[in-house]
Image (tube, rainbow, N blue to C red; front, side, top):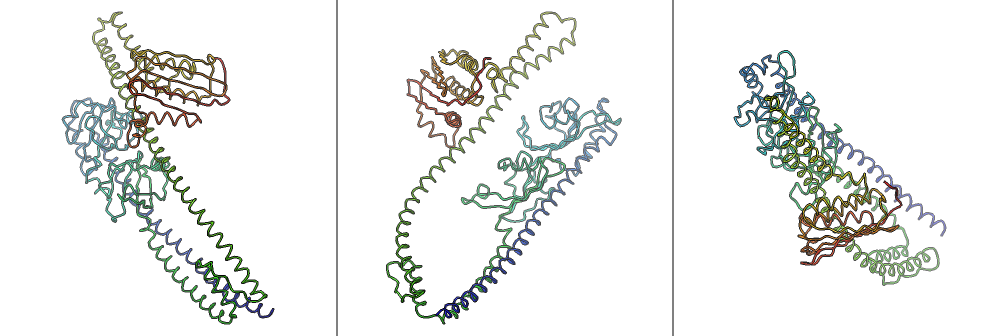
Length: 613
């Protein structure tokens, strides 16, 4: 019996283990190596194509920059002779066969348009110094290739190529520039962005993530910079191959994975992006993988047949035991396994029967656990979706807040400071033209105007980040906030601060509390129609508590917070809650229509600096 058991053990071990291990290991190594080589070759081809397109576009840009330099090299530039005939001829020559679909222009060092070709009557005597690429080249004197820029007057999307303009003596006298319309089909044709497949597209992207031109015209002027990926790669001037999800681009509900090959340009803050579905690029590798899997199955089948031939010499008890174990594998756990003596096979059959009983108990427990786990998964999935929706809403709030702040600052600079500076310049010009009219009254007027400009600039700085918060602390900052937004609008306020005078908290606590109070006060000033506002601030060693109450018209808190998805309304309230939660605090909003609103904030205090200012 011992010899037979040893013989069976050797036959099964040698026949199955060696054949299966050698075959599968050999095919696994070979298939992995070949598939990796195939994938590497596919990616290198995409990268080579991106480089080829990059080199072509760099060559086009360099050629057109040289066309602009040729205006200075023509020796006909003289902006002081009041004769623009030679300059116009130089512009005409530079314009021919160029990519400047919207024309070429000359500017003086003050940003004033001197000459355009083709001639544009509406741009004569126009000052372009407010355009960022133009102000940059005037300040630095270095060539500039811009991102897509939206002109304020016409709202057109244009690209600027700008070089310094020099006269025949080599003196820097202005700027020669060309405008490119990214929507013009001629640009796509000159860039040779051909359609290379239904699911594949080639994009030229600027450093702001905007598509300048594409082999798919519908993608032009779209924003596609996910998590500032393109901005980072372009600024680092490094090539890369990555993957990204394109469900939003393809118009499909399911998420598809694309392989992205990106190469930055040398002469412009742009890059070449080639995106193609992963399954298309890796199709040859996948086919190889299927072939090797099929061969592996064939060899496994051969080894199985060999094992079956060996098993024919095994005794009937082993066959019956195998049949019983197969029943167990199929889920038949109610039928007991027959016992075969007390030898090793009998012991094995007994062990299998014990295993059958325990497995039946385990399966029953597993079913109950699976049902409970499925319920937990559904609950957790629901919470995750809610959290994702909340994050998306907060992200939209951050972007909207940034854009609103930028619009506000731009409007204040344009409507107030720029106007006052223009008036001051006019007064200075009048003084220069008529010096005999300069007297103390006129000087006082200009002094008051300069003081007003300085005050307006201080107001803008305070709205961005009130220096009073850093210099004098939270108490003074809140007092300034109430005076600024309530008193100036005729709203009475009552402030009760039950705190240690001049006590400073952790900087994160101070700015968070200030922003929450600021949002509440601004909401009251804009929407509440209140006559009186009550603000009470209490602090302990571990907690700071703030109550803000008004007698305004009130609102439905639940409906406002519920409507935040996809809308701007209510984002301020959600932002206040999130600010408080970041510091493990709590914020409650209670409001009754026609009665008023009460906001309560509780923030825990960390061990922080405490000093007298």
